[in-house]
Image (cartoon, rainbow, N blue to C red; front, side, top):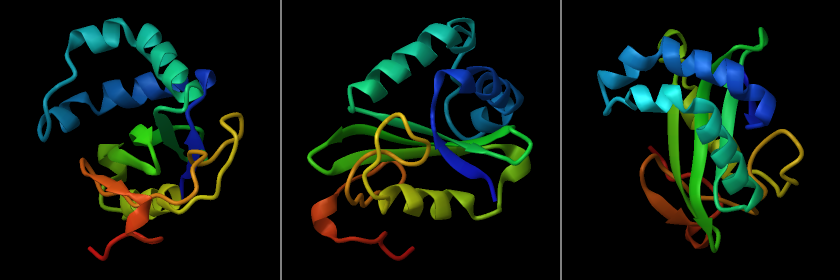
Length: 144
């Protein structure tokens, strides 16, 4: 199973490959990011790292044993024990049940510093894709 890692600067090249290789696959289900996203990728990646350092957002990558990025799991607008969860999984990795497993890992992770790999440094998260939940709702993901 891929390892969930908090995004770092050195993830940028593999993350860009992931986005390019899966662009058409993602665009079939959600709006395309557009050419500007790819043209300004490095600046955008730097901005994401700034938000992460400010502890407002937490961006994760799923990294295969080969070092290839096969997914993203993000916690956005983190405040007061809640955040919005979003994820993208590579076409070749789809159907392996990784989003629920890795999302649960993020949701239930113990606090960590932003310098260490793993999930966001929060106590307990309750999240579901594109939905905001608070940690006041409990300590495990809702049944699907």
